[in-house]
Length: 394
Figure 1 (cartoon, one colour):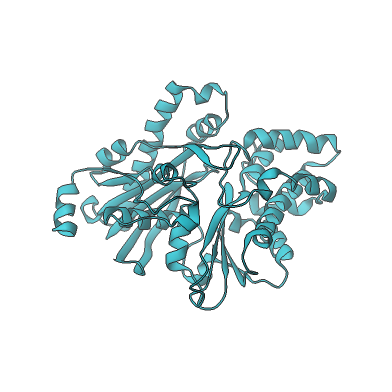
Figure 2 (cartoon, one colour):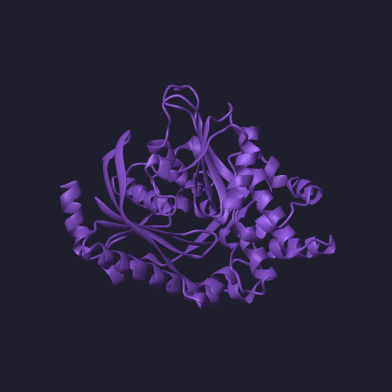
């Protein structure tokens, strides 16, 4: 099937779109990216998204959320159409659109269970604008079954990225960091484990925005962090955050590691007499140390290899810090195993939609903590749905 995957991560820096070719069924499922790109949000839309993530903000009131739900969908539909045009095909050549939407809230109770999650991007708008059957809202069904609803990449990792003989850590560094710990094919007794490791780029990006008065939305090439010195004593305090000790499965989001906390940390760094570069260096080290520490704490055995994806791949200072923490453990990118670091999550959405269309589960209880596997997502019919039903279901 030809499926377009669409997702914007917790950094909210743009929409990752990928036209994917998915076929087969687990365990013999194949998935490849035909074409992918990232379409930045209009500046005002990104500002509204980030504001909507702040509790008690006027931007999180019902009227603004309702408008943003539509405006994000319009941006997603435009990204899908741009991808179709760039691929030189027509909408009729696409079977499904898979839309993760834009997460603005992911509420975790004090016991670690997830109460609610909200991803914006009205699927009816996407289906209407494109004429393509759209599958969206993947998280809630897993949460209803007692799971965390994330990381959604974990099931695709399980299907596509297990190594024959050693354990792998598949680490995504988006706004929030998440990892899938995969047993090798040779180990049929152990189960995989997936969870959010903590902050990815969210704290770094927000801090850089504040420290540069908006001139830089992120640390380009990790240059600010490279120019600073990590405040070891402060880093040690930050690593005592209770989230890092919480036993998986677990998830988090901007409500815990977002703009509000970044503002507090920038102020705290200033009180310590740290320079802007020192603050960014320390927050970058927090992402690297918390990720590496998660493998040491929770992997059943030492991992033999770490595969990195997401926007953090483009921060060489962050990657160097992570490599320093892991010592002799190899750290490679998704490109080394035939996937795109930038567009893997869009591929994951396409894969999940493929499984949903065929009424197959999109996760494993071992990955999210759910009581049983579930078919994920909401299906929004479109102009091509009847023909697609005939072709795939007879």
